[in-house]
Image (tube, rainbow, N blue to C red):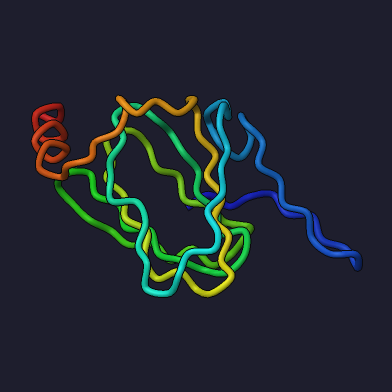
Length: 131
């Protein structure tokens, strides 16, 4: 988890995500997920190259990451904390609370060839690369 710089005063809070300070990669793409229907999961894919920071800017959801050997779940429910996810990680997003907005900051533009869509292929490659 990455603790983001947060400035607070009587007018509210301002949270900063700045390359070379809060994160160790250049941001080349940002997107947010919202309006997720109750009981709907997202993700279900892996990435070959990208670095990403995931933040629940409003609400909460769980991100389960899998490196081909181990799985770990993280509850994202604080807009001043983000989850860093590096290359060769499979991700599943579940348990979206109503009204949740999740923000993804990524180091590369979208490239469909960069995705793993099948877990077995991802796991085999992750284990081969780790050997």
